[in-house]
Amino acid sequence: MLRHLARSVSAAALAALVSLAAAPALHAADNERPRVAILATGGTIAGVQAHPGAAAYKPGVLTLDHLLAQLPGLDQVARLEGEQVANIASQDITAELWLRLARRAAAHLADPAVSGVVITHGTDTMEESAWLLRLVLRSEKPVVLTGAMLPATHPQADGPVNLRSAVAVAASPAARGYGPLLLLNGELHPARDVRKTATEAIDTFQSPNDLPVGAASPAGPSFSVSASSIRPAPGGGFDLAALDADALPRVVIVAAHGDADGSVVDALLALPAERRPAGIVLAGVGNGNASAPLLAALERASSAGIVVVRSSRTGRGLVDRNLEVDDDRLGWIAARALSPQKARILLVLGLTRTRDLAELQRLFDEA
Ligand code: SIN
Image 1 (tube, rainbow, N blue to C red):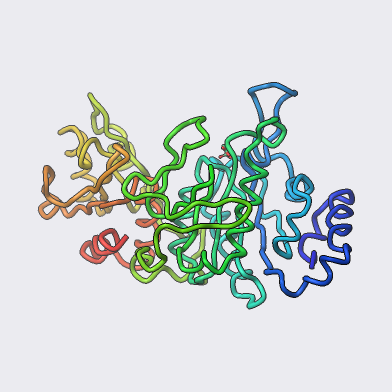
Image 2: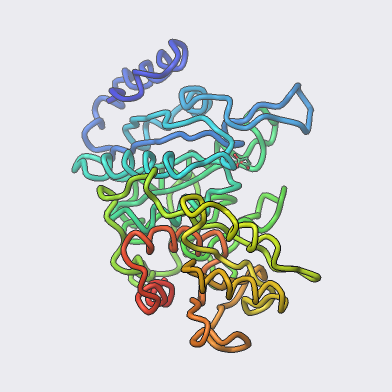
């Protein structure tokens, strides 16, 4: 039951888990409980305050065994197996770690005995990881990303209830078919639209173009939206086995703002060819727009073969083609519903498949 977990847990946490597993009542129900794999990556849920009462803390310190040791009885909800995939603050996530995480999730999901996967993750880039997983995982089984806004040592830490709820959701057949779900503050958000909207608030995750698809508690999920209404992964998704982190196209985000010139884009164009990005995502004002000098620099970039995608920094709504900017003339792509950071991920993966602008636009239309 604890086969993966046993490789990394401390003796005390393992003893606690083993003693739970050894309880006769649990033995009786052992085969009936679903199996859930937990992949830990760090974040505030694994964070530790500088000292008791301190606001300052360090994310990505505690290991999964510590987190589980705070949750006696969780083993009664599901048979758990766990892996410490990383222990970082999520701003340090890399393409290599994304693909490693995706491959570990895919391996667990392919196991017929596993009901679902939970991923503990920092909240800062959790929405990006959820979206990447949406694009590369094929399973109908639940994948639930959760984290915390308060570190594990805080008296009001939200991590423990989030992790309990995430295991209950991952164990539930009702959560199948939604793609990766992000769980925080008792809400379940699908990957495409969810974004972190506040620096410190517990209700930081919102789906501004949609609503949460349901609620979650340690008792399990309750869905208000059916799984069939979730859009499939654009382009049918991407073949995880074929992706190589070192060979992924480089795509950068350039922000528009008042008084913006084109110097950032021109600096990118001045790079040696092998370091120049293959794509630029504009985090534009309004409907994906930018100042005349920045638009002119982006036009120079696309003339030099860099794919330009226009997205919006506003946080809500769609970026449509050819409204204020002539995408047809410029050969640019409109990000539609995707935030700049999610548009970047789709462009990275899209460029592994094609450089055809119409095909790339179709991916964004389908997202
Ligand atoms: C992080 O994203 O790793 C730090 C912030 C958080 O988890 O809330």
